[in-house]
Image (tube, rainbow, N blue to C red; front, side, top):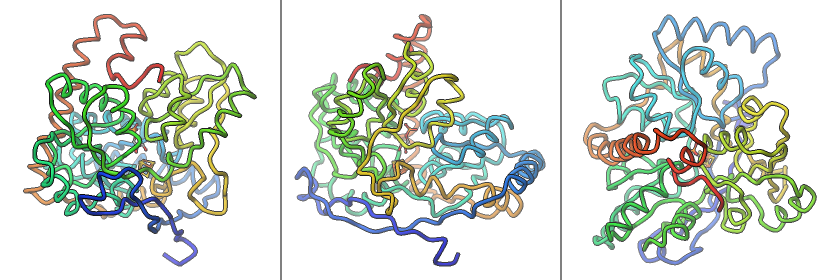
Length: 385
Ligand code: 13P
Ligand code: SF4
């Protein structure tokens, strides 16, 4: 990598230390980096896609992609019998698919989750340095100290964390099922220690009324959506429905018609009776939204709008590291395999399996009535804010 291929990424990092975590807003600006994949000509893209299809077959591998990665990778996943989905479905699909090799196009925690659920499989990723500001903002040792300071609380962590953080948790949740799981724990009288996303945590707290102590992490993409500007945009588009990922700030979530995971937002775009949508999540999702709801119009929710930095571009710099070039390379060489320490993996498995089990039971419970309202109730995070 030459310096031109590297960009600096700024994000809000919580002030570390158990005491500081309990204080809302205790954070500082931290710097990380991301690689910028090379630009390709249409001919190069098409040749790489053909090669990747052949390599997936030859390796008996399946591609599991997230909605925020490059559109070509999303299409390849679908065209080759893999899947493109939200984090919950990526985990479930990878676990249940018979292929011995999974190629996970997304960020590192997604590859680690696949490995923890299927330690016997080979998990490859286009770039192992594709990380997440939530993961970076929640180091395992600091998190363990936070948990030690609050032993009376049930530890619930978001999927966007390292394997070592998950190893310390009672439950892992994704954005599609977090609200339902916390509702369930709250009904049992449990007090929650939540990490790392403060916005998702406070959204769930407001919705459930649960007693939640929040780690102060945030997603560098969603943290940038602006409530005041969104309000102005809605006035210009009075008929538009507003779709919001719950990693967004409270004043953005408050204006949502639907709050949900990436899959849930795509389903809403498809199913709601509207022609125009304002979308507050990573703009990589628009590829699938347009395919799922042809003829409908999608507008990106406003950020601070400084295109000179990556901070406000509404596209995750680490998801963007997944490209046709490095995907072809890992399939050819077998490099970039994900490894998770066996002991950490075993401990992390329990909290992930608990979530998948809970999701399967919820699905069985609501499936018999196949209408939209019930489908939405399945994950609880979907519906008016
Ligand atoms: P979903 O589980 O909703 O796809 O979210 C993953 C993520 O990283 C969002 O920023
Ligand atoms: Fe993490 Fe945000 Fe990127 Fe999702 S979009 S992977 S939460 S930095």
